[in-house]
Length: 230
Image 1 (cartoon, rainbow, N blue to C red):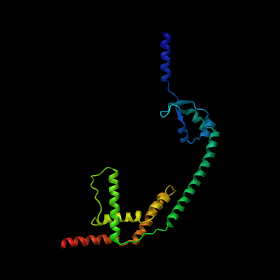
Image 2: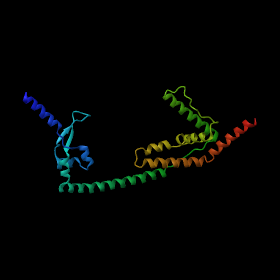
Image 3: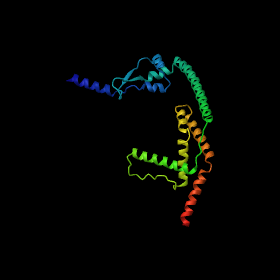
Image 4: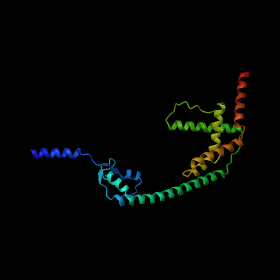
């Protein structure tokens, strides 16, 4: 009976003992370690932990005391200084390449030939409303909103609203804007290029249709005048 009690007490003491603090491999890498450095300066792990994602691959653990001691060694410090210098050079080179690519993609956008065809304003506004309404109806159908109030556009809609959807129609349907966007996808500096391209296309639209907003506002005023005088 005594030996059973002793065994239970020993197990209790062992389980209550404070376990050594450890680092996981990812924590080591956050401290600047590489796989090669771990193998060279630390070797095999000191313990393993339970991996909640997969039982087949336990978490490798290294005692913090041993890691900190290794980091204080002259050999490790020399390795750290050497690799740090190499990484800095690599980082600087990558930055230079990224900057060069950004300049190249900006130059590409600046040299694009952007053509905006000119059509009569009444036809343009009619086409814009038709395209906008088709798109709204398509989205409603996709979402199952069959009875939704879509607030469809027409030639008597608010002039500023008509101006916005007409500019969108010209940009997406009457120019190669969307095709140009696809050419920029995945490129370094694409965010800057997107904005630059949009600004250029809108600039060309404003040149061709410079008095579009004035036309819409005046037409609205004329219709209101007819209503009040009739």
